[in-house]
Amino acid sequence: MWWVIAAAISPLFDRIAITFTKIQARNIVISQQRQEMSKLVADIAAGLDIRPATNEALEGVDSLTIITRSNWFILKDSVVMHIQNQGSWVRDLYNALSYTDKQTTLKEITIFGISIVANVSQVQAERDSNNNARELEAPPVKIRPAAFIQDMLDPYRAHLSKHWSQQHIDDVEKEYRQLRAVYDNEPHVAKAFDQHDENTFFNDAWDVVKGRFSGLRQFCGGLATTFPNMAAIESDFSMVKWEKNDTRTSLTSLALVGIMQAK
Image (tube, rainbow, N blue to C red):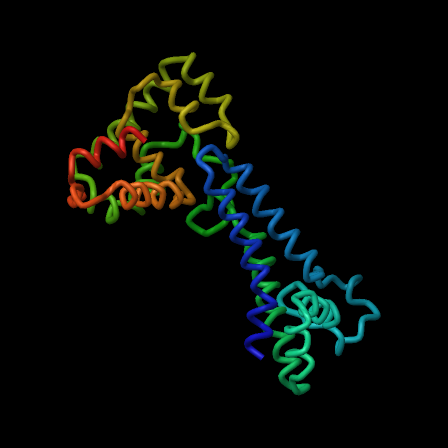
């Protein structure tokens, strides 16, 4: 039974991996991430024929032929077809199961598919303290310093303290207050910020203040990196392994540092 379940959900994992590879791209913005996640939900829903469990959709449907969960349902025949799509070996394994095991298999695959569709469709890039979507696409410069400290800085203090000094953290607060003052007193900066939205690239937005507030920029850069890109890190280690030889045995070798910088 578990071989059939594993084979049925494997292509779903493959599809998820494709999406998360795309949303790790360095230049992708929040709106593009949302589009990729929406496409993921649509593709999985279409592949398993997952449908919203509305009264109209369920009208006249035999309850014995469907599996429901939350506000969604799947026809059992659709899950069986998905299993058969994985090849004759998987099909024959499924056909050899007892009736009870077949029903359990269909239910497990259904729960997995519906969980992805239901949960991923609720993902929001920005959420408030009640875990609801923020009214605005991104925190504007106009929020009060007290709100910035409470909602954006305080939740990360414990983590920041492991890597930053207390002075560095205090400077972030100070620089945000200074940024607010710039916004209030420099009309051309305020006008530029007001034109930004979730489609604005991170560096383009910060270029408005022309190199000021580096500590605050570093802090916000960490918040903006929703999906860390491991590909670049793995590439670096691959280069180290490739370049090391009998005469390059130290990870702190200046020669290796030069090679890494050059590449």
